[in-house]
Image 1 (cartoon, rainbow, N blue to C red):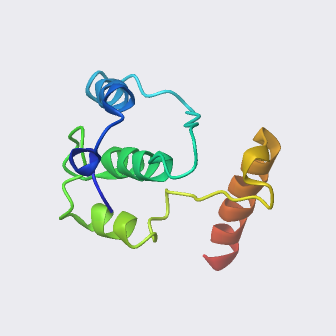
Image 2: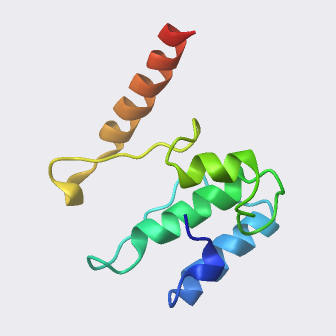
Length: 109
């Protein structure tokens, strides 16, 4: 998974997200919107990786266990939400996905 340092362009959103991390003021949710293939997924993955990195910087280190799990799309705290109509993901879709994810974890334990 690419970190912020690997993303070309989108400097303003990257700076905003890194500032939120460094100041400890990360919001409960972010909407990353833009044209297809504009780097939305890369930005979201870099942000999630930075938040989960064990070295606690403004970018993922790419070396710790958390970063490796994020790279493999196998981190237990990073949830990917999809929908048949990608531009129509609602708050309820996200709540349902999270609820299902955590209830599945409880059943596995």
